[in-house]
Image (tube, rainbow, N blue to C red):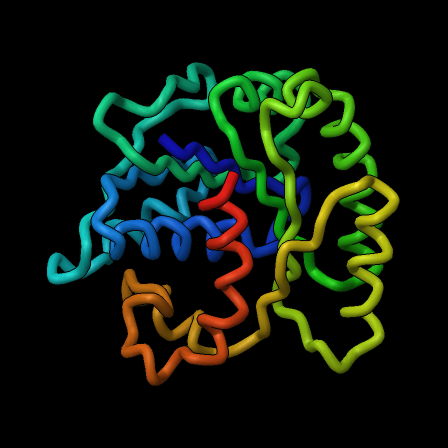
Length: 208
């Protein structure tokens, strides 16, 4: 079973976009997928409520922030979306039951500053120090031609965290998510460029 945690201390970083898209991709591979949502706004679960029945099924992982249980038996992929300011004891508990941690990052100075303390905290967690979990970052809403985009790898090198890939800003995300869909639910001809951006992340999750 693959257990993937999507986390960033700052709101609006793209956690739900990553969570729903990874869940959708694995569902298309005929995996039994569960999507958990610890955010009080329950953005990922609202998205799940809108998902058309004609698309591959994604199951709801019902968990409470006071008791984070392991995914049920039979699940092949579990993806957990988290709220802003998710750290401390709650983060420590979750790290005991996941094997991948993905941190979405916006390429702005404010977002990088807000993430620095979190990366330092993450590095001190026992599960990370003992390499029981793999940690990687994904640039979100990135324009590759800007100076800010080039700052991401340099920033992450300070914490020895790889930048797995960068995802561009496109209205396709908003258009699909509000319908309970993802880019992976669209015809391949419409998402060729975006598929190429997601592929390094998919490969990273699959090989570890």
